[in-house]
Image (tube, rainbow, N blue to C red):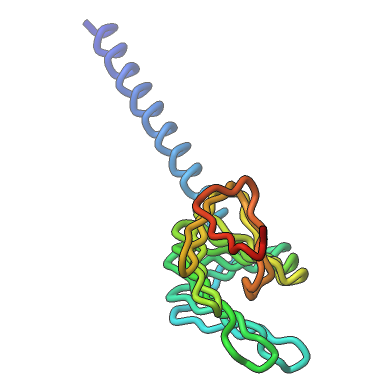
Length: 187
């Protein structure tokens, strides 16, 4: 009987030790993951309006309900609750307005990536729609490698990709389809 009782105590002690050790490892893993997330420097701002200028001339404004700024070696901004970008000409007149559900701006590269329900309206009233739009601030060009539709006053054009200057005054579409109006003087 004594041997059975000693085995029972030994078995209970072994189980308690194993349970305690497994809980300790889990807690250490949780602490490790938490410290990694806390180490990533993030600033959160709401109701954001950023102005982009060059030589004291306003070129664009970025509006976002929430902006997360990641202060890493390659800093970037995330706008996960929507974003609007307004592009201006040299006379401070709006030339295009871009909206999207999500945005990411890579500060060092000066690249803005817009995703999900991207809509651009230019000065002529033409509407560009895509699921992606990349704005390169250095080259002052916008492009997308995703499907795009462009609606003008009298036609809708579809394509597999496109590029345009940031004011969307001109554009080139790859593999375009749609109904095209051609005047007789162009024939």
